[in-house]
Length: 389
Ligand SMILES: [Fe+2]
Image (cartoon, rainbow, N blue to C red):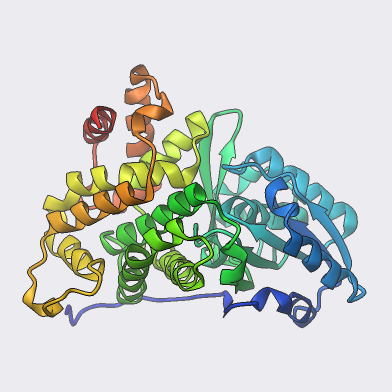
């Protein structure tokens, strides 16, 4: 260990994890002193039985509740503006974000707009974010983006077809209410894509130039939990043990990458998401093993350590087994196959667009933390490998 090590670690979010925790929403809202709640969600979640019960629970507590259910996948600038307008009109004093990463990210930027006005992209410059956006309670229903504990939100600029990031500790949710019960309704394909997104967060956080000891600890345990339990969560969505483990892994991976960084997989996924609106989790999941194979030579010991974390119940004692960086990529490739992900070619990305995708990927802010830092030519090579399958 490096004796000269120094780092700082802040987690502004109180985490409440456990089965049935969502029933505590009224108590937690009260604890924040809130009385006018805007729930931000998407059309799918708003139709679930437990969602209706949550709205009922809150309404019976003499608090004003409104629902904005217009968040789209890869949340758009227009969704943020609409949600902020509703929050302003009703004088909301708390946002309750319920859903996958899209509603939670949308709420983070709407929380700023509702108080300080302006357009979502204004706040790409973090110095413009005021100190007191509306407080957010985040309830994830996928496992996941980890957005319930991160400081950032990724929003699509629909005009420029570009994803931008708004980042500040002041937009981290005040409370993350993390309840495995709420992930039971995810269909297998969504479980697979969001679970692989969470695994990407863990792997990229651990192999990043920005990694530090606490993010390392979270990332390694997250990789272990997700790699060990995701196949079962996909096979049997009602398996609460598997669901709980993957959700906890997703939460820990969120803490890891918000204190470290993501890397080249997210650089490509954000370019693809902005240009073609392909769901974030699927982009990451499909690109992950290819990027690992491309980068592992520059970071062998960290990838080998990940291979050890992702190896479930070795028969002959874990220390006896030698792990290699290649093993980590192989485990992830096998996992991706087991959970049934689409081929990159099925995205129908025009080959003529590869240079632009590569350029956007290399210009992404997280590329500087990838080991190694990749050039536009590197990204082109990875895209060609993805296309070949
Ligand atoms: Fe992600």
